[in-house]
Length: 319
Image 1 (cartoon, rainbow, N blue to C red):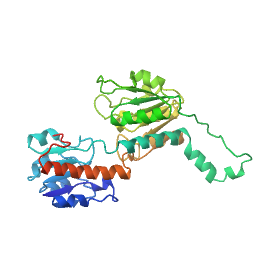
Image 2: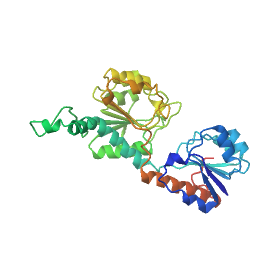
Image 3: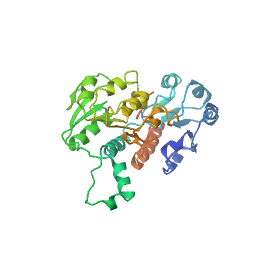
Image 4: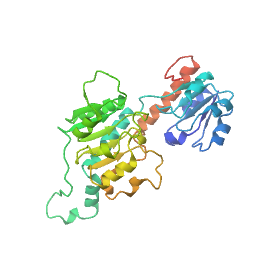
């Protein structure tokens, strides 16, 4: 078998990929940034591993030996799964590998914003604290999350785990279902309007689809408390970035944390880079899922998917 990983840089240079050598000839490319390269590199591959490289009809038709496409992620919208199925090519993804990592980053973003950690760190390191006439400094007051309301948009695997951790801090958890599917949950389900009005913290853990694209715009942010914090760890297109920039500039909410953006990497003209009160916004470059443990699990799960395919099993099969 010839196995080609088209964008191994997305899982990090520190992760050992030698596990794939057991299945045959393994070739790893750090990036594949053009369609022409993708066509050339996959033309005689039996198995393609991709994270973000698009695998469309042209690539599938050009890869005459192709039998399996492994998505190095949970979402597989970069693969034409219907055409792959039509051609008898299996597609397998990996689910649940980064849940704890994303949950951890959700709380890291919250506390960074809520407790003004950048401000206090700089206050000490600048030498200002050394000049103080008292032992403490309360230049930026913060509140505790115990007893506050945490609103979750998208109560899937990650959203539910965030809810559990939020509860352990003493939060009251409510949620809005982006799918509209009725499920029995231990948390109160509310409308989007009620969630935005009631919550002290709003965190997004939903996929991007026709129901969530542009879900949070200026009018929705205006419903939130002035002291509220908005966190997006779902997909970038759920929050309208121009509207968020406007809301932050007008001090409508206390702050926002984003790990995902509509275009990644961020474009130089993104309005979020030009907001007046930069301390109100915390952006990380899509790293919530990238704990060392999560990335190792991802690679091991891809290997298990290949093994299951070779043994004729349907593990994690999506097409």
